[in-house]
Length: 319
Ligand code: ATP
Image (cartoon, rainbow, N blue to C red; front, side, top):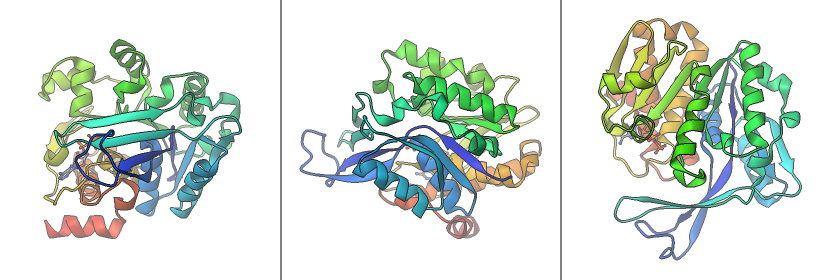
């Protein structure tokens, strides 16, 4: 199968109608569907690939709206369950004039945190060629146990495990807890992707030199990636490593670039798993992923700016 199953949170971001204001100054907010694992599933589907999302939503207007967005984008929502008693998560988020991102979460608890292991769509997870997840679903029970169980089911069924921690410091009780829990499942993943910020958070060192990156490398990994924004990314595999520059674009809003990047890379890997052992093929796949990430920065919001395969190939061809 070429199915990518993505596990975790789907929520609504409320973003100011006006650029460069604090949350307090914002005159009004637009709702933007998000949640990194949901973005990844939609990224894969937008590229023409098979994708499914597993997670819990509130049995409310927003939850039903989000499930419809998955379906409208061609994502299998057979792994979505609804919680009668908890709301769909909300996040108010703004990029302030000083360049700092400001978050405010409404999760007390939200439906995504209440997914239980017994509610997992086991048959769907077993069909995954790649099972992808983040770390937000590790923060609180019962979702944490559901997450760990889903990883087990996928691994037993032969899926590759893909991990993008997607650090959100404000959601964790402490920085130490975040670091420990994020690293607690580090050795299980076949593919791990971190940003520069996450690399610094996890190593305590502000550098992307190979010796720093290698502190997070494990012999259990097939591929480790460090994304570098407009600089593209560095990659580390068992027998080779390198860096692949990105494409030049007019950046408007980086939201979802990392999700587009990993979604595109997973799409390429399920189409040709031998890319993980072949440096030339892997670099081609990473170029495709860089282009997909780059395009996602050229428009506001995550989901509306995820490109089709044709758009990605166009950017690659024009470079
Ligand atoms: P986010 O959290 O904003 O979704 P991230 O920090 O996880 O993103 P980035 O490193 O910003 O991830 O971006 C992911 C990939 O997208 C990069 O590796 C690169 O390929 C591409 N990309 C991001 N920004 C740009 C840009 N301005 N120009 C070209 N490519 C970009």
